[in-house]
Amino acid sequence: MPELPEVETIRRDLAPLVGQSLQRVTVKLPKLVRPRPGALRTLCGHVLQEIARRGKLLLFDFREKLLLVHLGLTGALVLGEDGVSPPPHTQVILHFEKAPLFYADLRQFGWLEVVSREELPRHPFYASLGPDALGIPYEEFFRRLKASGRRLKALLLDQKVLSGLGNIYVDESLFRAGLHPERPARSLSPEEIRRLYEAVQEVLRRALELRGSSVRDYVDGRGESGAFQEEHLVYGKRGQPCPRCRTPLAYKVVAGRGTTFCPRCQR
Image (cartoon, rainbow, N blue to C red):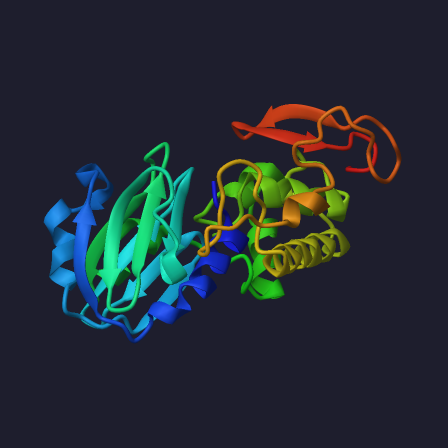
């Protein structure tokens, strides 16, 4: 699933669409569009004002209405500039003045939804999202960890607590902070919380510099792969030597997600 660095990379890649009007839409798979396939057509003739992001959610601002896009597990948004062809499994095409925007989704768990500006604050998914993982102040991060007895992996994956993190960046952040994924959050000392906060920020910023992680299906807004997977220290490396102590990396299911960690370095 595209996580914060991937979604933010896409948002930046789509910046050329701002200021263009939406001319028409092509919907090949109606079930992806909420509340009904025809909702997208109500945006035609309107100018895109801004593309914002909250966690893993993209918000296309057409002033009176917004288009919310969640990429689900395998969704992709690719800008059709310079003759770029539609990627495989393209399900929706938004035809802007100068270039089309392709929404592709192999497993079809993503969604597009049109909402009014007045509805947005009450939108169930939008309203449920916690602070953005890249923008949360340290004091708020500290408070949220200390208030919970849940295991770190489960807490950091919870989009209501902190939005934007997924399996890749939680595993990588916990390893860099030297913290076991099953530690109860409130058991952390102030020093450990600071270490985790800094690890999360460092990992997210570095992943952004490298345009995300292309582990399976992810491509950026230009249809190209990211490169942060080349700097993964633990994710996807079960059984390999820990890059710090050379102990074989362990793997177990934590909070319903496959989790790779060092049983020696992470306490």
